[in-house]
Every structure is written in structure tokens, then in C-alpha cells.
Length: 267
Image (cartoon, rainbow, N blue to C red; front, top):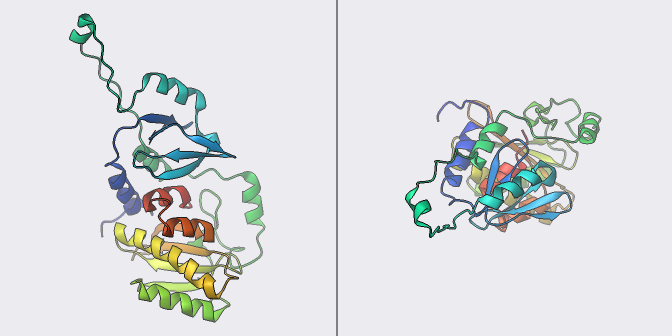
């Protein structure tokens, strides 16, 4: 495996490769950090979130506050996406239009967020600092204020039957290098999986979602899974909190795994 430039670099490269095949946007969404998203149509607001339909039809969400509404409207007054504008005046037809500067894409956004923390409301930061349940109370924090699963105390999960069932299920799905610990909350197992490639990261994410839904059939008190993926050198490859809702969306393929990674990874 290549030596990563950062803890999530190989997964980000996989996402970049997937997104490179997306065609030009019919609608451009400008974010407040200056980056843009290529969308199939104008976003829709649902509560505090913006529902975005990507060019391939996949739907994902962003915090609506991240969108620069004024610039988005301005850009789309002149940006016709995949449409061809025909000027029938001979004078204009003879003149070649000047080359437009390259717009920042979602790939650029990924590169930016690789080093920049995701915004986390201050109230959430404070509540997390005061957590007393699980093993998260004495753990370190990520740049965005989440519990850093790599620093959670490695204690056996209190419900041994749950840990055993999880381990058997993951092994049956081809996930061999996995450990089960007590997670950041009493009702969350921490599943740590060693991944050695881009494909292994996405497989671990998909199998982890299936594992949560499987274990809740017999142990409904398991509220979520803390999922930590690391490289063989123990560098971070991404961490997630898998809930019944987002796990069901991923298993049902309501969202592409690359889009799920971008939306839910905890930096």
C-alpha cells in the first residue's frame, strides 16, 4: 500500500476517482468556502439541510448554511451546464469565447476537507466534553470535536454475546482483521477494522452497516456502531457512527457509498 499523506488519503483518492466520471453539471452550487458542487438540478431545502441530486441521480445532504445562495443564483444565471447556446449572428459566431477559469469541483472540496475540520455546533462540543457514559469520557477529540475512536480505552464490550455475534458476522462477510471493544456510549460497540486498500475501506463501511442491522434483530438495545478503520500501520482511514437510519440507507443503496463517506466521515 502507498504511504498516505494523511490519515484518510487513500479513501479520498478513491472518492476522487469515482467523481471524475461524473459529467458536467446542469446546476452549479457554490459553497461559502468558495468550492462548488456539480448537481443535476437546483437543491431543495428540508429543514436545516439542503437536498442535492448529483449528476448520476444520487441524492445527498449538506447543511444549508454552507451554501452561498447569492453566488449560486448569480452563477446559474450564466451557467447553462450541459446545454449548448447557439448565437445565430455571424459576427459573434466568428469570435471564439475566451477560456473560462477552472471552477473548483467537489474533488477540490474533498482535498480541502482532508485538512480542514468539519463545522460542529458549539453546543455539541460542550455536551461531548461532558460525556460520562461508555469509554468516550477520557478519549481524545478530532479536529471537529468528535470523540476520537483511536484514543478510546480498549475495553471488552460489556455484552459479550453481542461482541461474539458481531465478530462472527463480520468474519462470515470476509472481514478478518477486526476487533470489538466498548464504544463511546454504553449501547455502542466499537468495531475496529484494518483496511489495506481503497476497496477495503468501502467494503468495511458497507459490511459494518449490514452488521448493525443484523445485530439489532437479536439485540435491539444496540443503538449504533462506532466504526473505526485503520491502515496496517494503524493510521486512521476514517471513522463513522453508524445508526439504524443511515445504515439502512446505505444497505438499501439509497445513497452511493462514496457520497455516504463524504457526508458522514468524522474528521
